[in-house]
Image (cartoon, rainbow, N blue to C red; front, top):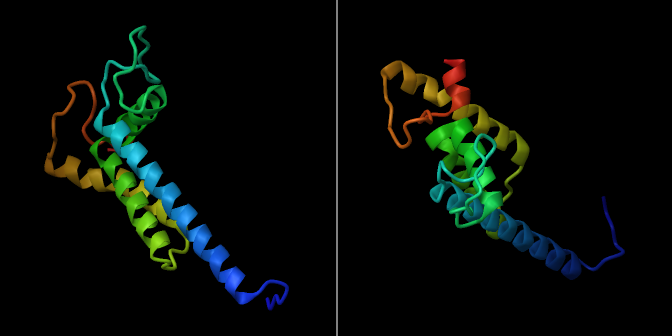
Amino acid sequence: MNNNYFPAILKDKLAQSFGWIKGSFFLILSVFLFMAILTFNINDNSFLTQTNSPSSNVVGPIGSYTASFLVYSFGLLSYLIVFFLLVSSYAAFRRKNFSYFFIRLFLILVSMVLIPQAFFYWGWNFEFYSTINSWGEISYGLY
């Protein structure tokens, strides 16, 4: 579409500003998720446990619920979401064409469920909490 209502300089500045906003959003979200997962405590409030004690998660109750969902669902591979958001942030800051964002996110999520199937087959297991499967409940249920 050839739109001559706005000058080319203004269009370029708007695109650059939008790229910085999008990159900043992805960077903040990846730092939030990383800190939430890193400081995950099984005794915090979550979807499966309720306590009266304050949350020990650095991000607070929202981080506690988010981390518990990711760790219970995807296990150790939940850090791949953080990596994906960092790559998306880098692409937005560098003004690279990172198209099909939701399709890529969907493929990452599917990979986080299918990759552990090989780990189950080979018997790889890391014990980080005794009551949580290291590769997530979704992968374990599928296996």
